[in-house]
Amino acid sequence: MQSCYIHTPIGVAYIEGNEDGISSVSVHDEVESLSDTIPENLQECAVQLNEYFEGTRKEFNLKLNPKGTDFQKRVWDQLLKVPYGKSKSYLDLSKELGDVKAIRAIASANGKNPLWIIVPCHRIIGSDGSLTGYAGGLHRKQWLLEHESPAKQQKLF
Image (tube, rainbow, N blue to C red; front, side, top):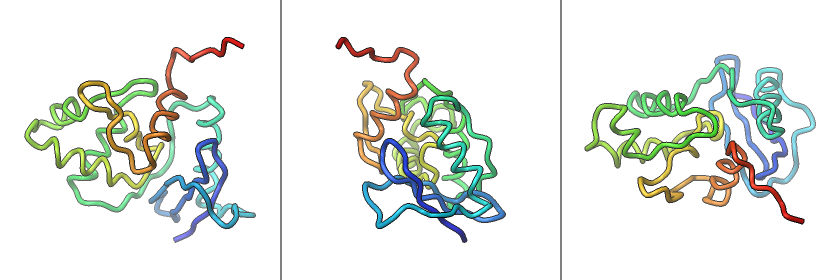
């Protein structure tokens, strides 16, 4: 397994993967140092993440290889269908997956998503519109949702 650290506007992204695909992307407040070189298998992921943060990429086109249960992978596959700039509730997600009673299990699988940003778990919110839960912190979730918002807040001064 290869890994690297790259700078993003919301912290330092840690990317992990190999020739089978990207297995993990997470964002941290601090690390000792950024990577001097990016392993070949992770270069395209780093490029696409940079494009996302620059606002020029709305969809990722990467070979993914997350580790998880079949149920978790089903939830993560459903997350990939939530479009850029849109959000859904955990209840909506559970309905789409065919079992409203599984809402807690679906929320748990969402929280265990190892591919932050790429598999957009940040687009899942509470039924009342509240920002509930995000492994990277609610401040990052809010930043990502505002970054993707079609109605950008303009500064007055």
